[in-house]
Image (tube, rainbow over all chains, first blue to last red):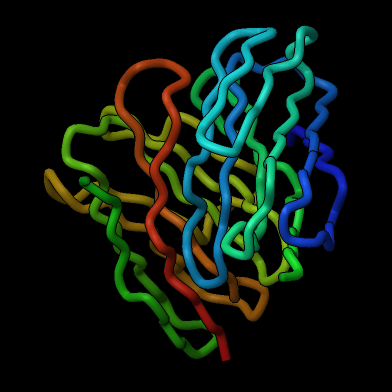
Length: 109
Length: 114
């Protein structure tokens, strides 16, 4: 199957710091998605991107669809304790969705 | 806001037994999915379902797996003869008919094989 490389694998940051994570693929996608997963729950959609170069914000979150269509990044500004969780990127081409390996975020108050 | 619901939240089954995981997708959605997440690992695609048939499946989705939409609301995943390595979280997702529209996930069923 498709491989999406997500980095970093984990992050430990102080509350108030900004966070950046990214996802790269060897294949192009038509859609990039970013999800957050809390323990014991399903992934929850944060941001969806539909066009190369698109930059979209959702509150303190900003994500971009890379020009090459093979990458995307997610930024979180001014992190707060409830940002803790695992963040997954997902790429879609056609009807199938491929998930990245996840970035585990820990926010230290 | 409508949501995807999954039952049971936790299923414990003896190895070799059959198990059925149930999902009620969002009512106006047309595409349905099952994913698996082994503890501490990424979410893995199993199968997608559209128009009452499987549209795509991964190499994980072998002959021991099957899916069904027995009525207008439920979407089930059956594992025929469970193995220890089937222990994982199983997530159902659905989305509407427009290409590229994101999926909405249920909270998952934790399957534990003893």
